Length: 385
View 1 (cartoon, one colour):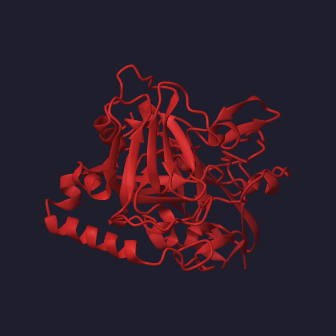
View 2: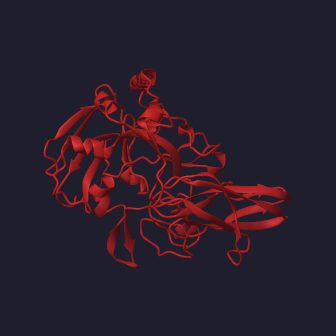
């Protein structure tokens, strides 16, 4: 079983009322701040950190300074502009025929519940979509991400299961179907169901802190869902409502979007888990000087730690092992690197990852109309001068 990297409430707050007060003070400062300083985003999105996709912003992985992704560098995936929310008046409703006692909580109610910290990636379901066009020659609809639609952070909040317990989930509610709907307070009310089993996992959170600070507006202030290992749409931002039903919940994000649809899919497949990937932390089409170079990057899996990363300079004819650097956290990522005696000319670097459950990046995948799940080893172009 994959190890989970979690921190208890005692470890996170160190038993300090002052720490909780500081979090509340920063929360209140955010609540009073202007909701939007730009058309689509609240935080700055400079071109040296992000690849501009309009409302969406892709992180340049080569700019990441360490293991955790700072909020300033965390990719942005919006369906609408961030709503202007005040944590002091924010409310969360928990309802549906799958609960015995519907509940409503304020932000302070949430803070009083036992908390948990989890280090996990959040990744757009379409991360890697651009390669369907670049490498397969067939365009898929949506933002043409390369591999920067991902970030890893320490998320702190309340296990979703603890909130569902307050509403007394009925014991006969099925656990394997998509029947726990989480809905946002943005203008389009983005929502996505998950299974009750997933909702009750210890590290499925309603998060109010990101890397020890209140979750920023672009990333779901005051509360967002964190659903480790599942596609990013499941980690709904600006959460305001949870519905539990005794039957499958069908919404557009499971019937029209976030499904695998194409010639190789006779019936649409609803996306749940992310896919295993690796990425080189160099600009696309990077230029390096000849000589000894250390090439680094990231690899991640939705189901466990990374067991190995391999690299190739001959388009996969031969492979060599890269060094893995701690930490190596399940459902987060690992940093890897290798030494390369770079010679002048044009090169491509391929990397492939294998996780502790034996899953390896595939040599090919079928096309799908919305461009999800691209995780074939990518030939990253590099020019050595």
